[in-house]
Amino acid sequence: MTYKINSLEEYHQVYKQSVEKPEEFWKEQAETFEWIQPFSKVLNWDFEKPEVKWFEDGVLNITQNCLDRHVLTQGDQTAILWEPNDPNQKAQHYSYTQLLEAVCQCANGLKDRGIKKGDRVILYMPMVPALAVAVLACARIGAIHSVVFAGFSAQALCDRVDDAQASMIICSDVNHRGAKVIAVKEVVDRAMDLGCNSVETVLVYKNSTQEVNWSDDVDVWWHDIVEGQSKTCTAEPMNAEDMLFILYTSGSTGKPKGVVHTCGGYMVYTCYSFKNVFQYRPGDVYWCTADIGWITGHSYILYGPLLAGATTMMFEGVPSFPDAGRFWAICEKHKVNQFYTAPTAIRALMANGDAWPAKYDLSNLKVLGSVGEPINAEAWHWYDKHVGKGQAPIVDTWWQTETGGILISPLPGITDTKPTFASYPMPGVQAVLVDSDGNELTENNVEGLLCIKYPWPSMIRTTYGDHERCRNVYFSVFKGKYFTGDGARRDEDGRIRVIGRVDDVINVSGHRMGTAEVENAINEHPNVIESAVVGYPHAIKGQGIYAYIISAGMSLNEAFKKEIISTVVREIGPIAKPDKIQFVEGLPKTRSGKIMRRILRKIAAGDGENLGDISTLLNPEVVQSVKEGALV
Ligand code: PRX
Figure (tube, rainbow, N blue to C red):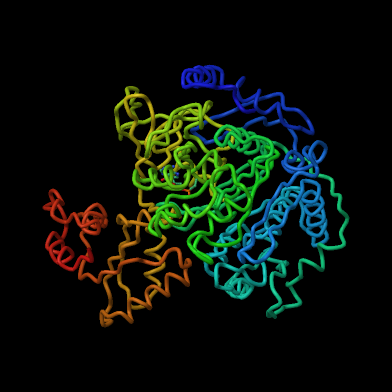
C-alpha cells in the first residue's frame, strides 16, 4: 500500500501509529496480497534465540503475487524491459503474461530434472531475462534460490554451492559485459572440479554461438529442458516462514554467510518499501542498475517491482560501454521515471564530466535513488543537478542484505532530503542509535551505533546451516536488538546519516567485503607469512583495499604483487583485488597478539601522524617502518 502521506507531519503521525500498533500496521499491509490460506497470527518473536515469525500460519506463493495476480488485470503490460549489453541489439519487452508463461515453462523443466520444494538451486548468470525467469521458477516450485554474482571466482562459487548443498547450478555459456565476453561455463566447470559434490545438474543457458566443454553426466541445455514445456505450472503452496532464498554476504569473520529470507514477510516488505520509496505510478518505467547477484537486484529489480505490478528494467551491460553516456542514453531511450544506482557509479560518471548527462533528455526522471554505501555531498549535488536537474528528489536508501528491504530513506515529495542523510526510518521500522554499552540514545544530535529494536517483516531469519552465527553476529552484541554493524549520526531533526561500518567489513564500490576474507585469500600465496587488510578512502570506489603483507623471502617486487593479486582473484574474484600492497616487516599487535587495525587504517588513510598512544603495543617499534613505507 502506498501511504497517503503528504507531508513530514503526516509521516510522523503514520510512523507513530506504526510503532504503537505494529501488528495492526503490518496486518493491513499483508492483507493487500493474495494468500492461498490467510494468516491468523501476525507476529511471534524473540530476539534472544533469535526467532522471528511473520504471518506464520499463512500460505502463499510469491510468484502468484508477482505474476498471476497482475496477469488478470494487466497481462499485456511490460513486466520486464530488457536492455542488452550491445546498444545495437534490440531491447526486449516481456509482458506479465509472457513472463508468467516463461516462468512456468522453466519451473516445469526444473521439476523434470527432479528439483522439488526445499532443494537449493544456485544461479550464476548474466543479467539476461532468463535469470529473472529462473529465480521466479525456483520460487514457483518452492526451490530455494541462491544467486551468486557472476564475477565471483570458481572457488567462491564452489564454497557457496557446498555451503548450500545445492543440487543444481544454472549458468550461461558466456556473459557479455561491455566489450568483454566471459566464459562463465568454464568457471562453473572449474568449480565442479573443486567440489560441488551435491550438484546433479548444471543447466546451461545458451547466450552465444560459442562452443563449450560438455559433460553428458551433469550438463543439460536450458533450451532442451525448458522450451516445449507447458506454459502453466501450479504455484507451490508455501508457508509464510518457508525459505524463499539464500544470499551469501561477507561478514567480519570467516567465510561469507548465507542470509536466509522467507516467503511471506519478504513479499510484504519489498512491495511496501518499493511503492513508498519510489512512488511508482502505473505506466512508469523503473530502472535499478544493480546486478541480481546482490540483494538490491533481488528486492528492487525483481520482487518489489513485480509485486507492485511495475515495469522494471534489467540492463545486461556496464555504465561505461560503449561510452560514459550509456546510463543516460538508456534513460532517454526508455523514458525512465525512477532511476536507482550506487554512489560509486555516480562518482565514476561524474568524473567523466557534465557533458555526458547534458547530451540526453532526462526530463522523465521523477525520483533518483542511491544505495550501497554512504553518498558523499559532492556526488549527491552532482546527481541532483546534472541528472535530476533539481526536479527529482534523491532517495538515499539505507539497508542491508540482512534487512531484505530499504529501512531508512526519504519518501520523495513527502519528507525532505538532505545531502548525505538517508533521513527517516520507514514507517514500521524502529531504528535506534545506541552507545557502546547498548544504551539507547534518545535525544537528537548524537552519534552512535545503528540498531533495530523491533522486527520488520523482511528481516534475516537465520544464516544458512549455522543459526548460532546469526545470533552471535546480529543479536548478541546488544541485548534485545538487531545490530547492523553500522555507525550513524542523528541530526537535530531526527534524520539519520549512516557513516559506515564499525566492524571489519569494508565497502568497495558498494560491494561488501570482509577484511578477513581478503586476508585469507592473500595468505593462500605460499610466500605470504601474514597479512592485514584495511579499507582506505578512495575517490571513486568509496573505499579501496589496502593490504599489508609480511613475505617469506620473496623479492618484494611488482611480479610478487601481481601474484598476490591473482591469488585473490582466484580465491574470491576481481572485486576483491587489493588496490595497494605494502610489504612490511611486522604488523602492530596488541599484547594478546591481535592486529591493531585502527593503526593500520590511519596509516592507509594518510593519517599516520595521529596514531594516539601506541605504547601498549606488543611491538611499537614496527609502527615507524610501516609509516615510512606507506603508499599514500
Ligand atoms: O554499511 C552499510 C552500507 O552497505 C552495508 C550493507 O551492504 P550489503 O548487505 O551489501 O547491501 C547493500 C545494498 C543494500 C550497510 O551495512 N550501506 C548501504 N546503503 C547505504 C549504506 N551506507 C550508507 N548509506 C546508505 N544509503
